Image 1 (cartoon, rainbow, N blue to C red):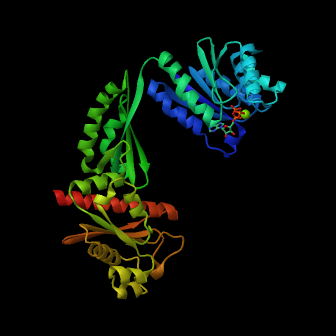
Image 2 (image 1 turned 180 degrees about the vertical axis):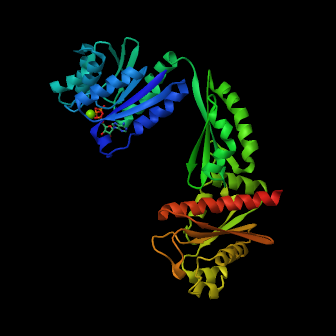
Image 3 (image 1 turned 120 degrees about the vertical axis):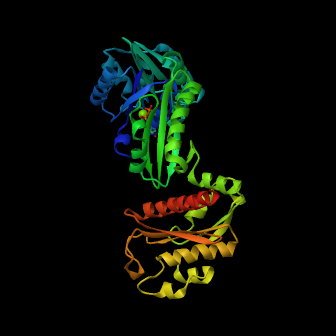
Length: 415
Ligand code: ATP
Ligand code: MG
């Protein structure tokens, strides 16, 4: 079964609100094995809405409209659906009576324009909306289904998760499209793709890569009669991916890199402390966002100004004041990592120093030049990166790569 969402509202086109309802519905459809292939957004204009719906009905089995069901003149979804299906709009006396009752109970003045919400195509049955006035509409004509839902989130959500799910369960053919996310760090998107090339051509399950900041995600998706069977189909594909990518797969599902790292450290009864310059505490924030991180995360310092690097971490002031070198320097990163490890008496010390921009730094250090270091008992590793991008991207990347470096040091010490 192929589905399409048609979101109605000029405010969506103007970027004034984000289409979160379509996002909610987009997550529901695969649970019923429905192939969601198209999405349209159209303004509050009856002709364009009719055109959009005609196109949607011509290529999809089930069409969902979102919004435009209210009583005002710009709420035109009912008209659009009737026109697209070649149907007529009629006043539904039962809906009208229900609306009048609602107005009475709430002591609100009844205006005849409210009856617009009681209009429906002849082929439609109303979908109850306990959280608002306008009902949803289930329209079925010549094998096509159009389901109209209200725009306000508090009305849309319950309708999507209630009556719409019930309808899909009965009519969608009883399959599921189920995905599992595998999370990879330390390898670029092209490298990942190159290594798993043959898997990318498979059809069921499918494997799709997504580049994230500092990591790559692989979504493995299976279509099967139920979730258990889909999981069973995903399992061997995951095994193959893990055997090819090995340690680079740090987790699956909702497991973040920081969560995987905290688990790894806690399992080994090891600890970490951070010395942050470029990220200003971002790495500490990321690690402490993990529940139970206190068993592995000791603490750290934000040493933004060069003096603080010297005072708190014992970084060589000669390097810091050298006009050619300054704080964005591999040896500074090294000494920061060693310094914080000593200060906090932790198994590992992690440091980050660099220039996030927008202007070049002391010593003419270019934007995007970042040094990361991890120190441990008997060793220290420094990495140099030269990234492009906006300040926020560079800072985010620095955090991700520092965590990735720490993870690789920990894993190497296990072997
Ligand atoms: P109403 O009875 O309030 O007029 P409606 O069904 O006619 O409801 P719209 O008028 O299109 O819906 O939208 C009402 C409000 O619902 C919008 O101002 C917006 O806040 C929210 N909304 C509409 N469509 C969406 C969407 N696709 N995603 C998120 N919010 C939406
Ligand atoms: Mg409206």
